[in-house]
Image (tube, rainbow, N blue to C red; front, side, top):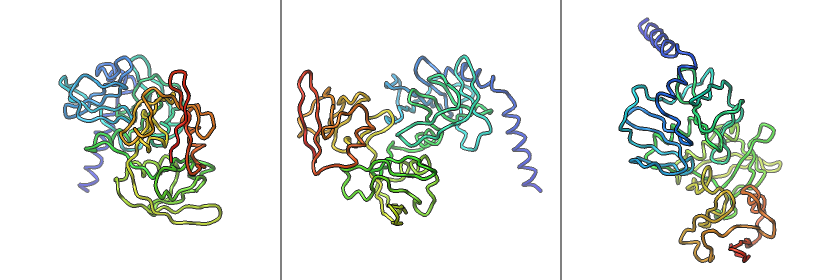
Length: 326
């Protein structure tokens, strides 16, 4: 009887807390100054603030997620009613900015660092995705919606990192299919068009669920995956490695060689191990194995069928040159 009484009281309190309509969420967004120009500056409990920005804020940074362009910073001017993340199912979702409210639903879930979530209605960028209790369900960025699971993990982990099995995946006819496999990962057991059925005994329901399992796994942990390859069922072992690209970072398998690009395929970072290739900042990738490349996805298509060595054509000023990598 006591448990029932307690449950009813908690339900009453939650309903009371959500009594305001979506207009109150807009007022909270405005009063909290959560949207400033092209950045989000969302007040959180414990004297902290969640910032989305493609440039580093000029405040004390607690931690930074370069993949999602998120910062957790100290908050000196506390907002009395900070935002909280809702980790329960939401009955309604609202895109909220300083001027309007847009009701809708998630159309496509976030598939890891490859593609962010999409909404059923056009949303302002940047803006907040809230439920009817004004709790955070996601944030709207130029690349799409970063969902609450990723925000919650960022806030909880001590050091930002993501796991990698050396694959990229997609949904095809209600199955999860390997769309590309990293040729630079030693002894990579996966092949393009493998259908992933289970991970660690759990059904791979969709690519969004499976990629969360991979990204959120501990570096160095071992996992069992049941796959269908052609007409055979095979069980593979995968060791989680550190993810090197995706989201707002360069997202090609070439990061595995120590070279990172911007979205125009211009080199923006070169690790020490990549100095042997003679590349420089500003070099632009034009071809992979004689095929013209215009974006990151086209690189995957070529690398899925690698030769013993891969030829990359770069342009530096008005000079073009080849680099061979193994």
